[in-house]
Image 1: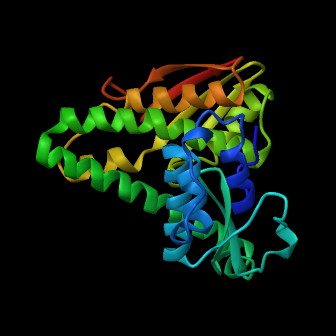
Image 2: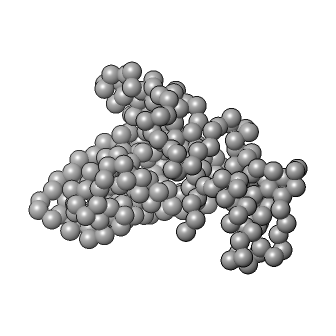
Length: 262
């Protein structure tokens, strides 16, 4: 497999190689198509799209694009961060990490809680917007789809950052604590050997709906996807079953309850 990022000369050589089935139909780039654009033309439609997008991204954000071999985190300025753009390393100016490193632990924790509230705010706003325009059924259908996809992405990121996997219930339950919504919810866990019951006692989305007079909504499918995806990505041996969750009846002090078992 060729490197993800090649120099102009390497791109041209690869495209014009006899092993390339498109080589016979290609011509060397003209002076107007030098650099990225010339290489893009030589490598066909899919490759062209990627490289030209990269050129546009570079011009728009004034970034520096570097190769895997030359990238060194130690050499990156404190006010710059490394991002992935379609599997390519891109360094951009960003002072956020530098600012975060200045903050005390207590403030960082409060920031995490704020970001969690921000996530729930966005989630609630798009849901209510769809509900007002298309009805509750459409909003719920899109909500379930969003959780089905986003929970897998989030679980994968949490697993990679924390180095989780094959740790059974311990890893799965720990991963829940780092999901975007978790810092805004109230919940506790009761664990006995290879089983654990996760109980939610404070659910901001449901409370917001009840307080606004809209009533509870059927959130069970969303968390079924969320928790099952989490188990599947963290440790496939762990299973989860729903014990209590709207739209089903529930105690006043419990919004939902889930059993995880190994």
